[in-house]
Image (cartoon, rainbow, N blue to C red; front, side):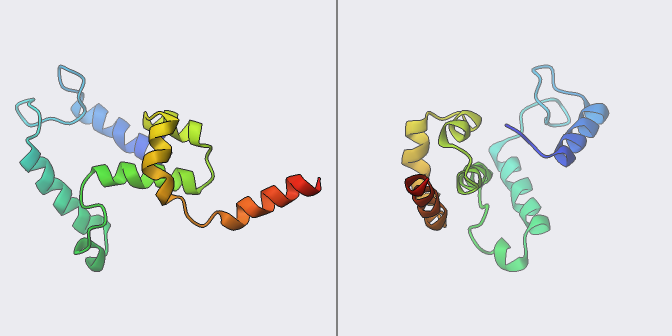
Length: 122
């Protein structure tokens, strides 16, 4: 999954400071264990208060960590990244990608119409 250079820098700094767990995980408890679902949820809830506006915090926006994955895949599709590329990055088949995310593609009708017209008049 490609990530912005700023996030790469943050993750590298984290690795330099904390290393990894014996099994390679980046994040672990003070004793090296896996975080519980409850602890993860509490951290996620607090992180939303730092990243979102007060109105967004009370909305369902990014209510679960999985919502970020969904948002990223939708963003890539809406940006015009070809479905096979998006599917590969997301770890989906093209069939699953289009079945799940086709309804998220929005605002591309004019671009599609221009491309079709351009091919027909070329």
